[in-house]
View 1 (spheres, rainbow, N blue to C red):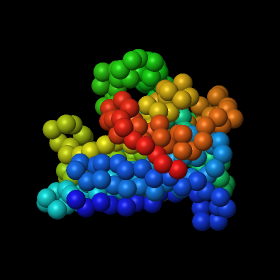
View 2 (cartoon, rainbow, N blue to C red; view 1 turned 90 degrees about the horizontal axis):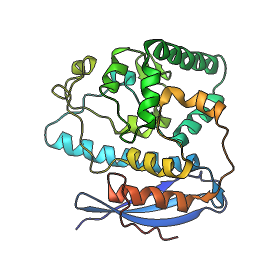
View 3 (cartoon, one colour; view 1 turned 120 degrees about the vertical axis):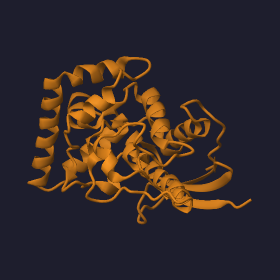
View 4 (cartoon, rainbow, N blue to C red; view 1 turned 180 degrees about the vertical axis):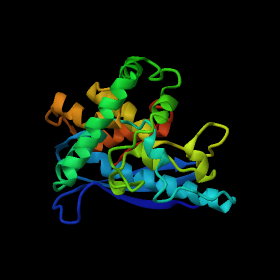
Length: 268
């Protein structure tokens, strides 16, 4: 059986003393041997995100190739931003990472992005959707009726959408990375289960991250447009866990699928 080897790093090449761990994740029938390179010491949950972003890209690219081989062409392209009007659930770690990203932007871009966040919140609040989103976040199922479609029908773009393309594409949330369609792009203007064909994934890192992060932080999922307000209202706490500990938790959820722990050993 062919075994793929993958190196995922959360540190840059200049980092002096990284921790190196290894894990084997089985995708379908294919074992993938992963080398993890992470910073030492206690870190914030969001400091482990680069590993999960790269893992998600690998899984999605792999399944997109499978779809292409079977004659299903991925129709997602830069300039087609219909999906950037969907409700994007993120973890508190992803919210903190987006806040860092916005803070690092030069003005006037930073101010423009912040105004878009404010405008989106006001528009959804006026429509009554924010109250329903908060109810969904507090419910055990995390879902309230057709909330996703109601959100989409407001046609309010993600604050990071510029010229119908993602302006933070390398840093976009895991949920966004996982969403690829092979149905005609025109169908995305009025999506439904009958008209949209997505690229199926054997596992979804976004779900594993959401479960692990929620249990760690006691903060439920949130829509992307909450990120800046959340960070202002809930200051980050000092880190209490190491990167291997955080990733072990996420990989256990990933291996188990559906959020339940599976069997994975990260060997440092």
